[in-house]
Structures are given as C-alpha cells and as structure tokens.
Length: 246
Image 1 (cartoon, helix red, strand yellow):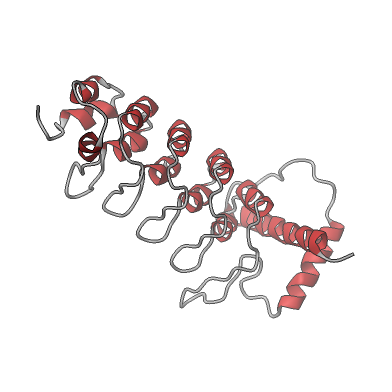
Image 2: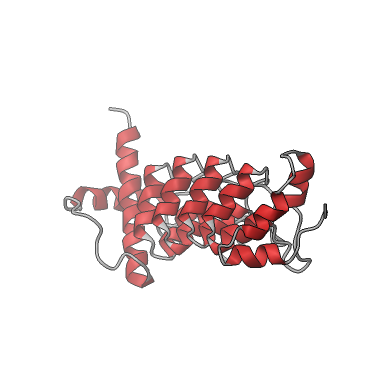
C-alpha cells in the first residue's frame, strides 16, 4: 500500500470526484498513520493539504470525508492559512460549517495575524461572519499591526458586518499600532479628543431615526465606509448608555 498521495487525488477533488480519495482510504483504518498521510503537504511551493485543497474548491463532500477519516483541521499552507481560513476567504459556507463542527480553531491566524473572522469581515461575507461569531470567534483579535475585524469592516464599508461585530462586543476604541497609523481607531482616526468623540457618539445616537433595515450603499466605497462608521458611533453610544450607572 503506497504511503504517498497521488497527484490524481487533488486533481479529482477539484472536480468534485471522490473516487481516487476513496481508493486512497480503502483498506486503511483511522489512526495516527492515516492522519499523518492526510495532513501531508502536497507541493513544496504551496504546501496545501488535501483538506485545504477541498476547502479552497468548496468541495464540502470531500471536506466531510476527510474529516471523518481523521484529517486534522490545524495544518496550514505555506502562508499559514488553515482550511477554515481558506473556506472563509472563499465564502465556502458548507465547508465552514463542517470545519467548525469538527472544532476547527476559529481564531487560528495566518502568518500576517489575519484570522478567519478578519478576512470574512474584510470581504463582507455576512453569513460567514455569523457562523464564526456563533462559534465564539474572538471579535477583537487584531492583525499584526493592530487592525481589528471591526476596523477593517468599517474601512471596507461592510456595514452589516460592522453591526454584527458591535453586537458581539467589538471594541470601538481599540487602536492600531502600525508605524504610519499608530493609535488610530475606527470611528475617527484623527479625532482631536476622546471626549469630543464620545459627545458626537451620544448626539448621533439621540438623533438617529428608527431603524428600518440597512441603508442603501452599505456594501462598499466611501459611502459604505461613512455608514459603517456611523453604525459604530451609534453602537458605541448605545452600549455606553446601557452600561452607565442609573
């Protein structure tokens, strides 16, 4: 019985053909030896595993079979991306559900410190964000430069993602530590004083009309960024009022 994975297996997985994978598994029992085989890197340049390949191509049946056969959720590609990260990056929701169901680490970041939640927020994959938050992903875990999922959601104009993060406890005042943008927060990166920001947050909350769904234009661009930052200000003010002593 061969101890290597034939190039045919990942090629077939890409097309959703599980025949060669089943042939690879035939006669093998689940255990450390099989797990080591399934977790092996397939190519030096990318270092993808069978599971990260299946997640990239959105082949949920292959992900399910690999997990049932003992594949680990932790191994990464050359750049430190797990199968869950890749599934979130590509908005492969069925794969995300399977991986979270297999207790994949929702907070395992790639080599740049980017988590699955961060990349889903950056791209505006709302349902993916919901799934990660439902799995208790760390809402304020920042990238290496201090940029949080909430910061990037607002920067990219992902209003609905920003609202979900606020409801999950996203920190409005968590600042970046990048040398060029040190100390910036998402509401007003150049605001002159914290007290002024808080006053504007309270005033925006007091004057906002009843919510009737998402405002148009929240999916990106400068308008989306303004709306996202508005949502952050309103959410922060609301949280501040709820937490203040009466």
